[in-house]
Image (cartoon, rainbow, N blue to C red; front, side, top):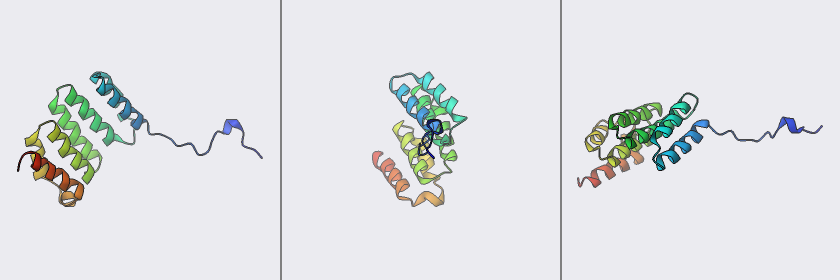
Length: 135
């Protein structure tokens, strides 16, 4: 018995629409279309499995639009959506420092959860943050 064309391939990999939205939003941010990037991300947030990844890009969009408060809020939401893992906390510190939000980055560093404090990724982000400040 042969497989008909209507059955289609059985080894097709599905792509999370959130990943496609994330890539598209980054492209839009690169050309300066903040509003379109925000719309792409907001639309994908309802259907994506990778909510925390989308929130990082939404934070970038808000920072690009000059809304520091919204950008910081989305960074915090991204960490929460990721479960507060070491990679997300490291990204949070790096993003705040990159935007020269040193006081806010220091607050994250000073309030690290015990379960990630000794993780190499977090230690590197903390060391880089202090090193860049000349501490």
